[in-house]
Length: 335
Image 1: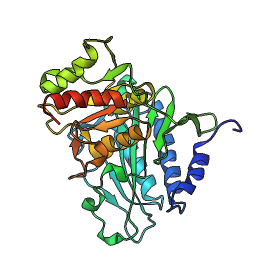
Image 2: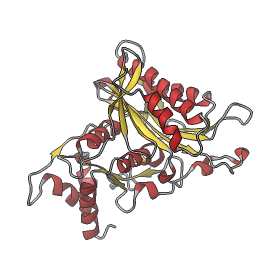
Image 3: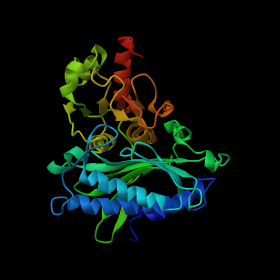
Image 4: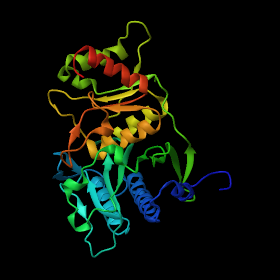
């Protein structure tokens, strides 16, 4: 332990950067990390116990709910509700946010999460994850006036964001607005240890990531942008990498560079990814690592949500690669 940094030590050291430091954020992160350890354990045992497969129900997004979705959501909601650090919890699996009753222990933080991103890939062993986004309730906001509308704030107001990746190893990648750090879970001691300090996205990557199955549903601008990567005129073509799990695809993009595109299409004219649960936290990380994130028209972090489950297109990754897409969009009059 003398040569490595544990996540708890870094969180404690970062408290000096916050003018609102009261210990609540430390408590929140402790419970969030504990939740992830529990979820990780169950993900790794998915083939051994009765938590694999669909429940038969459909969530608010119209998607089949997996048993692990339900387990992950229940674990996170319970830990956040009882942490004493949050006043409201929003989950992709819940139609409405949960507000901690005023007479129960609560704090100044609001957390949104996608409990188990990529869960449709559980039964084939693909990396999945938990995405989280944390905001701070203004000191002058009356607690009893909290409602869903009050929680809909632009991503630039996030105080922290990140994700847990459950794959060949379990990782935590997160930022409090002072760069991006990655931690890997050492199962022998049960600690997340710093393994990827100060992550920076290369300005240009070797890969692009998108679902080519939607090609015929894209507009001409998006088709041209994708062709600029796989059929370029004056350079070697990029390699395409696409998992279908946002956490996995973004993690590769963050470390290796490139661009991830989930644009609007005729089937999803407003995009498919959720702004508050997926796009905004990933955009926060991308920008902190020197990358960019846009919906094709404006910066993701500038978008003011109009609904808790608002969807958005997402183009995210290396700064120069995102700019290439935007330049093509401008040429087609899309921006």
